[in-house]
Amino acid sequence: MNGSPFCAEALALRDGLRLAWERGFRKIICESDSLEVVKVVQHGGRFDTHVHGQILSEIGELLNRKWRVELGWVAREGNMVADWLAKQGSLLSLCGFNVVDVTPPGLGLLLLKDSLGVA
Image (cartoon, rainbow, N blue to C red; front, side):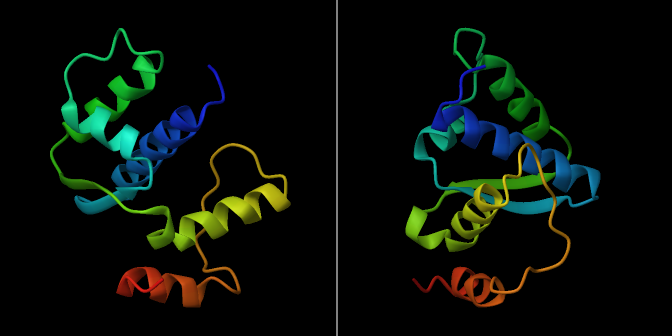
């Protein structure tokens, strides 16, 4: 699997959807700053010819479960929390999928700004 931005965004979407399902959430709004991933997933259909077809198929299977998922695109500037978390993960050399159950210091204000749509 290559390390393209598309692949990273698709993996984040898949893993986020899995986590939401496993934790019992049945109505979610899922936003990505990758317009390309959102468009490909929303288009649906068969993904077997796409270079990341396996991941996209898994996303499709998750979206087809008995729950309500609103998938949308958000500008990177409106997604400060994800940007902050990615930078922190990089600084701490975290790899893979990491779950944050407690708001880290310094993130509270960004959460508020993101929820209000304030840049």
